[in-house]
Amino acid sequence: MTRTITLPFTKEMIQEIRVWDQLLLNGKILVGRDQVHRRIDSLMRRKEPLPVDLAGSALYYMGPARTRTGDVIGSCGPTTSARMDPFTPLILSLGVNALIGKGPRNEQVIRSVAEHGALYLSAFGGCGALYAERVISTRTLAFDDLGPEALQELEVVDFPVIVAIDSLGNTIF
Image (cartoon, rainbow, N blue to C red):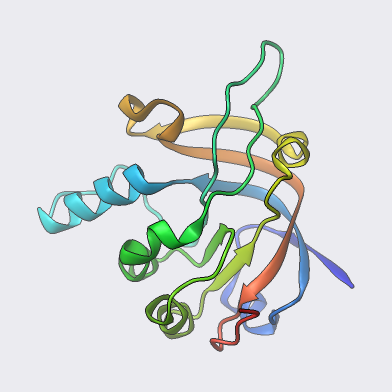
């Protein structure tokens, strides 16, 4: 059975969700990949303020593609999550409560997801065109100089994912 979720996630919602649950996400998700994670890590190490409050957000590891004229976004499928593993405990400590990407995560990430009562959601590789159809608006929030890898906000409708790690640390991997 597929559950439709209106974002942001609440702690109560997260506690009810389990591995293998199929979700359709509606609302706003943030996009941040390697460079965004490095910037956030650097700001935190220097004790400088973050450009946006990440608390309560879902963070998508999106592989950006060129946007054609007239489209909201280009193909926007998931990228490999493991590249963000070194930064994930920090990101979760900042209040991010859902991570969206593809592929397995390391043991430290699995423990951190459980420790923070968060979720890791698996998006479907090879479905970038499908995901682009689910995005109804985009805007850049920070780190404009990173171009398509800047910190962005997407508004999505019926964005399909599967729960790969739940708040108890159960995993499909």
